[in-house]
Length: 521
Image (cartoon, rainbow, N blue to C red; front, side, top):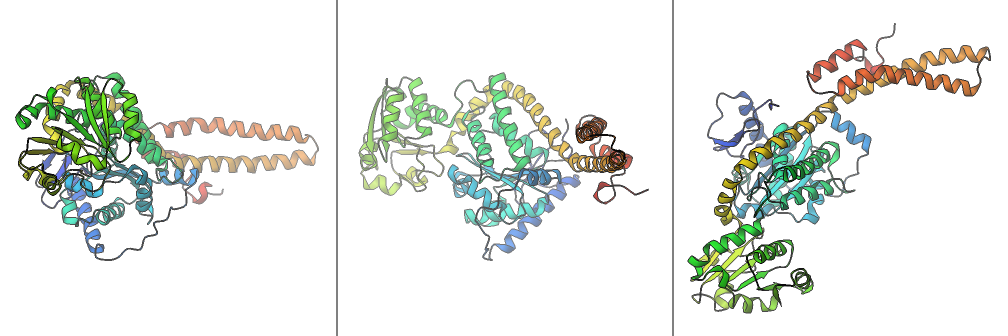
């Protein structure tokens, strides 16, 4: 399938715009020349951002309460009115960690953010995906210009960043390209570590939250997210894209192993290790360290509940449990310290290192795999301290990506099939109003003719009530069988112009009159 128009994959900047064409790679360009669609996209984005800029200095009073949950029929009607899917956000490929952490949202708050975005009505459906490497808002709307302004306004307000900064970091995709993007994300092809499995779990959670009682997924968005999860599972089952080290945690281990001799003058196998935090990232980290022969590690956490769970999961590893009060004692006797907490504030700073006598002592490596960051950049200014964050993992990623190029090609083939399947389903929604009109008109004719027949039969007392019910069922059955072919033809989106099919059928059955009843003869 060929995507009809140039993608709106644009870094929102007046000087740098990124455009993706079809299913191809994304490439930077400095001017939109010779492509009318690209110029229109840029103009729409610029107009939307101007609307945001004009409203930034004005206090908004949007009702942030949870809006009424729409019924299934309301969601179906909205979907059939031409809702297009869009995505706007930032990722490790386009934005620094300093910007990403400004927009990071805890998973428990994803639905609250979606409700805020949908509260004003410009956006019909929304779902938030926020991880350590990306922050993305998937949304569906009938008017992309107003919706883009609404979403960007929300992002600017939440981050506290001026629109000029957002322009340099955000990207946007619309229509088929937005669908292709979520498929690649779920398949692990857009991840820092190609094929990593954690993102599939995160997309799955995004879908599950979108269909919760307070979710804003709607018919189109929830279907797309569900298809993306299925596509991610299929890619991992039918290719070798997920084999080997494929997570941020494993990249952190590889990075520290690669740099231990240079930074610490020690082989990695002799380094004393510690982790601050005891969540999912720590569990993955310990798993990868165990595969390299780890025998002992210290875990520092606010409570001992999760560290004790890790002790049970890894009985062959000597896990020393310490609370946050003992943080600096643990850091002081460790060679490598990994941080993986959910804290929104720095856990380790240059001033704290100096206060605890760790400046200029024996070498210390700090590896931060958290977003928001746990380790301040200024730690690199402390003598004998080397600090790394998730952006520094790109060196490790380059090696893994090169090894997976062949698998990526196979994975993209499968993802194209899944993308095409969703797009066919989405296009079929445009036929729903016509199908409804056709059914309404056919039923109206059926009821009129049945009423005439019923009056005659009842006048002559020819049929009992049970027999009249049989006649009514017969009339319904005849109509349903006659309509099956035309409706199946409309729902079939392959091999033809869907709009022409709708126009032809509307003309044949005279469905263009008000209420679909046609002209009275």
